[in-house]
Structures are given as C-alpha cells and as structure tokens.
Length: 264
Ligand SMILES: [Zn+2]
Image (cartoon, rainbow, N blue to C red; front, side, top):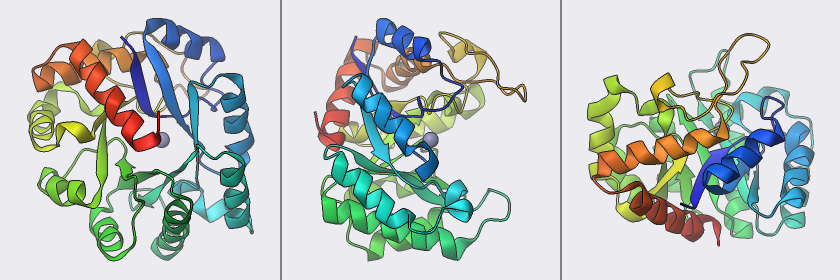
C-alpha cells in the first residue's frame, strides 16, 4: 500500500518525527504538509529538505489572519518562488472561529487565490460555516488551472457537482467517518466523482474516533487528543468500505488523484 495524505501539519510540535517515520512504515508515502502562517513556513520548508515525500504547501490560515504580520503577502510569494513544486494553503474562510473578521478573511483568500492562479499552484481550502461566501468567490474568480482541494469536506452534498465542475477535489477526514455520520459519508462517496476523491488526516488535528485509530499520539498540554499520521491507513480502509472497493483499490485511486492535483 502506498497512500497519500492530502492534508496534514507535520510541522506542529505535537507530531514527533518518529511518528512520521512510523506512518511511512505503515504505508503512508507522500504527505501534503500545510503551513498555516509565516511563523511556521520555515519549519515546513525544513521538512521538505528532510525527505522528498514531505510535500509542502504555504498559506495563511483564516484563524491566523488577525495576527498576520504586515508584508505577509510578499513573504508568501517569496517562499512559493523558492519552492516551485509547493502548493498554496492552508487558506480559506471560517465563520465558526471566535471573533472572525469576514472582510479580512476574504481579502486574504483573494490574495492567495490570485497567487495560486499566477504561479499555477494547487490551492488547499479550509471552509467552515462559510460555504455561501466560498461559492460566491469561487463562482466569480479565476481559479487555479490544476484545481483546488476542499480539505476535510463534509458538506453540503448537493453542492458537490457544482464544485467539481469548478475544479474541486474533496478529501475525506476520518474525523467525519464516524457512525452517526454514516449516511453522510455514503452520500459523499456516491456524489463525489471518483477522480476527485482524496484521503487526509489533518494530523495532529481532527483526531478520529478511537475505533478509527491505528496509532496514538500523546495528548497536548491542554489534554486534547492528537491525531497520529498513521491513522490515514484506517481512514483509507473506511473510505474503501464506503465505496465498496478494497483498501488497495482506494489507495491506488486516491494516490493517482493526489498526483494529478499536486503533481507527481
Ligand atoms: Zn489543516
């Protein structure tokens, strides 16, 4: 098995590098590591130098928009030019987070979207409670030629065809593959075009239910459970079950989709 993690954050201190090496031994090949603010871009770049399977993407996450230093746009352009194979993201819109500023979020979104178009990079989008504004932007703007990823996508399913037409890929997080969402995940597997499905962990975030974990990471200082990179293996198995294919077939499909979106 040679899986691809479409979205993760190995740069965070909660992920010891031994856990990344364990995931590789468990069948996780390449992983798209997403920077979320200028403060972590150097750590993301260091991971790219350490192992070519550490694929990278640089962006300003909506949660980090309020504290972004002046000039972050130029810094982002520079780090992207220094990494010709890198994607743009994690970026997006989030109307769930406390005290969000929709105007500042949209401005940061448009800046990063324009950079992805100009530099021909794949874009990774985080969207929480913001599907309306997201659709408005996507329908009115020039979009990256190679497409964009809606990470940890969990609805609404009726927008999937329109989004797919715009170039969207959808990555499944095991966090959403829980029993009470069983109906939802079946809808997803049925509605999303096969050539647009990916799997992700978002490790160390979005720790799945205990029965969907292959391995455990230590909780953080606040006691929050952390998602081990190896849990992608269980996520792929669940996705395969949902699609009615073998885990090997799901791995081959999602790895090919990863290569089409992010480059081989
Ligand atoms: Zn993320």
